[in-house]
Image 1 (cartoon, rainbow, N blue to C red):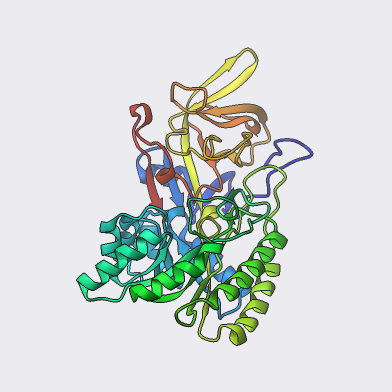
Image 2: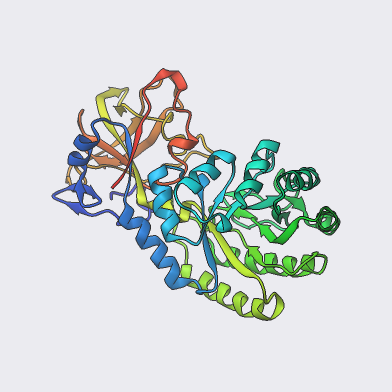
Length: 413
């Protein structure tokens, strides 16, 4: 792919085959796939890449560590069904996701439910389904005590801990300092006493310090800190720890200059922790919870150029899709300074003719920008723009009804 700047380029996007200058997804040429889908814009996810990523993780991580899929990254039902067969468990963040996970065939014993504002009706559903509930406040303990008594079922619980450290270099910090997530580490001993009094079925701890990190050293350090914190808290637990969710944080390269995560180093660190856990927490299973790392690189967003125009010397490729379908690529989903996702013209990848152009959507707002003055293959109306790294936080994280434009579709191939 041509560089955006000579000194800072995107990591190579080599997971999809290119034949005769055209990107292939699931061994199908992009133009053929667009015809099969019947419309643009659309998201396409490659099931072979989902399998490959899980197998890569299985090779790198110790067998004793369980792999969970955080469904918030991509809740497309067909994709969740594939993931349910590939991983050891599913992590959900709402009753809607819980239903989807169970419909996809996930084992309730390996489903966990996190979220800082669980409604009472959601807690009732979770207890009835017998999934593991990650408690995030004293309020949930009181509710679960009553719900468990009413249903005559055990309320399986773990404590989601807001640690006293953060994941350094994380794209989004979810631990350390004041947080809406979990229970502050210093308050956990008191909460564990409350859990014991309520008669809830305590199983362990959930620690998630941050996400989208490309520094293996930082992830390893956070895992070591999480493990040490869990050991201290286990001294106050009403029963032995059976599950220790160390979170995730594994990132994928989105922007120029970013390098892929050193997975081998993380695997070595987890292997060491697994050995230690056999002695320190002999009944505990270690869990890694991943979302975007499992699915992010297996998906693309495809939109068709409807107009090509120039304005005061700048080329704009105007497409039928934009930020309403892919908020993250537009830079409006957490970026402090907007940077380009890897983008190309999917049916002209090998074209020797290039130009600097901006890819924009059809919305009446200057925020609708998918690529800002990138070097791209020379394109015309009718060509297909591809946004890579789009398998996570796509349509479900985007305002699809904004300005009343048609929704996109998703396909698994």
